[in-house]
Figure 1 (cartoon, rainbow, N blue to C red):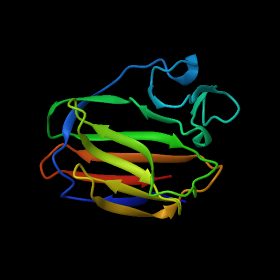
Figure 2 (cartoon, rainbow, N blue to C red):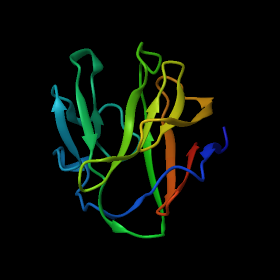
Figure 3 (cartoon, rainbow, N blue to C red):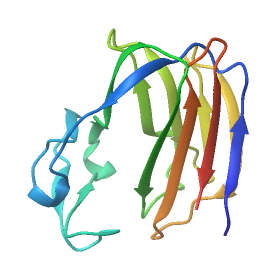
Figure 4 (tube, rainbow, N blue to C red):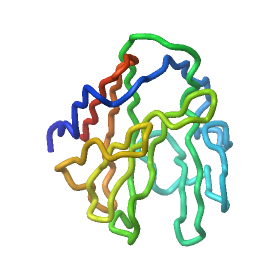
Length: 165
């Protein structure tokens, strides 16, 4: 499929420095990486994994919603940060405005960037003000692992790119 640049947005807004959280990974079957907001997602999914022996399974039928705690925002800076992860769904086209798959927040719990997938399988990038700032052209397919990479620069007005596969 090649790399698909979702967007390059010079006006994405001010971004902050971050520190990666240190986890043992879903390999432990624990919840170190995720925070339950509602429902009971299963962090010990062992039958469908991208690599290793476990993955986080979120069953939308039970209205599960977890946030993945990959890093903490700690200070202002001017560095590029890259966040990469595997994503797989068996119902990308589920009705709704957009299913959140990635959120970057400041220590004060303020949104900096959000990445969501629309019912048509297209990725959408949302800025701190809640405005759509870019929609992708590649469609995420059901039952397929996709590698998603988000790069953002900690400057005001900021800068962001999203790549798929």
